[in-house]
Figure (cartoon, rainbow, N blue to C red):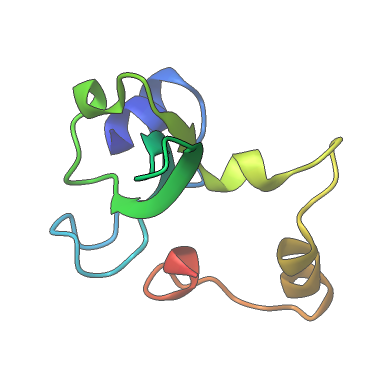
Length: 97
């Protein structure tokens, strides 16, 4: 999935750090429709390491990368705060945030 995002979709914000699922640089969010015991449907969100996940596992699911956090062209408030406060993103823990 990591290569798909970077090379085919043009979303380079997801990075390869360790390539073994330990560092969090490749973290994305996946949403999947689920039904609870009462028959109500809801979306369950979970984080995944895109460096270890095949694109084919996304069938019927919603993929959210860091680029998708923008709303109407504006950065998410956490992203804005990092920019305004000169926060660094070394590629180790911050992407997994």
